[in-house]
Amino acid sequence: MSSESKYVIKPIYQKIAIDIANRIIIGDFSVGDKLRGRSSLSSHYNVSPETIRRAIILLNDMDIVEVIKGSGIIIKSVDNCLKFVEKFKDIDFLNLSKKEILNLFEEKNKLEKKIREKIDEFTDYSNRFINSNPFMPFEFKIYEGLCIIGKSISESKFWQNTGATVIGIRRGKNLILSPGPYAVFQEGDVILAIGEETSYCKVKKFLYEDSRE
Image 1 (tube, one colour):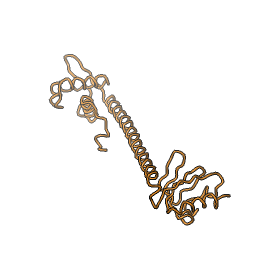
Image 2 (spheres, one colour; image 1 turned 90 degrees about the vertical axis):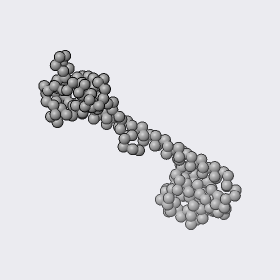
Image 3 (spheres, helix red, strand yellow; image 1 turned 60 degrees about the vertical axis):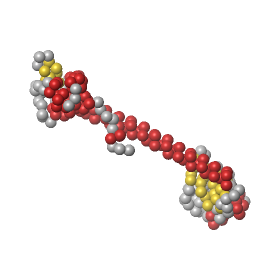
Image 4 (cartoon, helix red, strand yellow; image 1 turned 120 degrees about the vertical axis):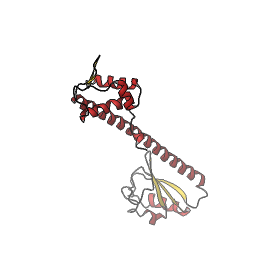
């Protein structure tokens, strides 16, 4: 994501109002000074007189300047400049935070979509090749009372006992792919394993015959 896309773009008249307020804060203008006329400001900022008019209205509403008929635009308060600039910093932060949260939700949805697609691919692969692939995917459920409950894949010596490799664990609505040797088996898990044809009987025996308490 580019840095520019992260920020909410302010209207030009707001940018001009903030710039004038900052110039007052740093001392370019003092309280009681008169700003240049709208046409001069329009030329300085290279915008239309209407844009300058909106910027001055904003500064006037914040009690930073006062528009006096016949006298022009008079600087009224430095303190209000500070409040004005801080206010827009807070607004920028809130807008940025909101945009970042929405972006995170979008990324989360994309990630969940990819996970679902991978699960569908895996399921489709299993269904199509279960009878022809020399490494068939097997599914075994872990029932209550099995000794394997509470043990990790490594601790149970799953591969040594069965010749099969655990490639996933379905736990409720979640699918843990490539769980690794330290993943712990829980009651209700469905083990997804691959191995040679003889591995099916070995896994079945290991889980349901040899692994009863």
